[in-house]
Length: 118
Image (tube, rainbow, N blue to C red; front, side, top):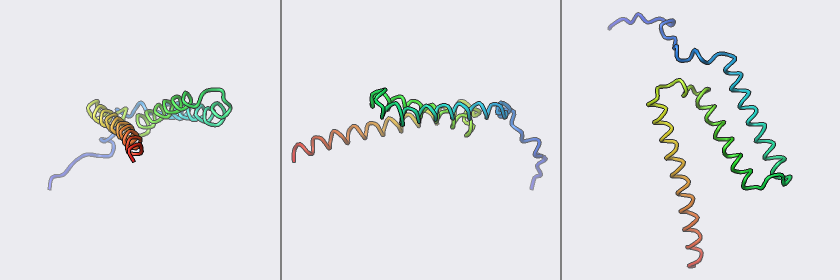
């Protein structure tokens, strides 16, 4: 067997040096702010008639995607990975979402036309 002379200190990552306590609190603050805006939209703006339902839904979805980006980028450390892995995961995610949207559209089309022919 070969001996490895790696110590715990030798495995420190310089890439993660950007994640200080202040950065974590800043990201947590941004996530809290976005969540607050989502609550305002869901509990006050849409039911109160201040914005139309479909506009509120689009804003809500966009804010949720921004929150997902922050969670994956900072708390799951994807921001600190190599560009190749970032692109592979991002492109895969986009194709999966695209596939789901296409299946929902096709399913709605088939449902509509199968019911009409019955």
